[in-house]
Length: 122
Ligand SMILES: [Zn+2]
Picture 1: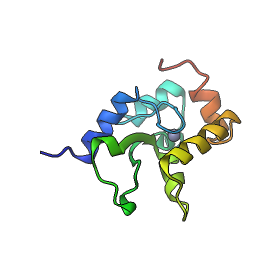
Picture 2: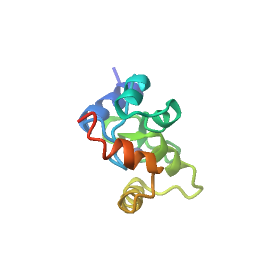
Picture 3: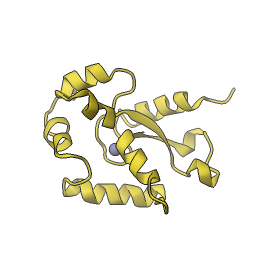
Picture 4: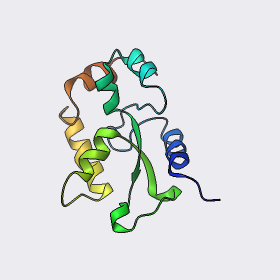
């Protein structure tokens, strides 16, 4: 039986130790409340870091739901990649995100202040 997308997402989440493929931020899968409590976030902030299934080779370009094509990415990284008309491929998107993360500009300041420097949840 083929694995469902939800199952593939969970596998990727575990494989990546719960961190986003692009920005390396911690993500949540099932409990936004617990995540928000751990990092002292609002519901809306926690929503940004929900784990989503990201197709490395996009579905619109024929990329399928199989293990080697699915990574776990936070909602923001996933959405931003695909909101562009000329969506970047995964490798370039990752480099782009890493560059901006280095300048603390990809996510809102609260991510850098509360999630990446809090030491919570590690
Ligand atoms: Zn991300």
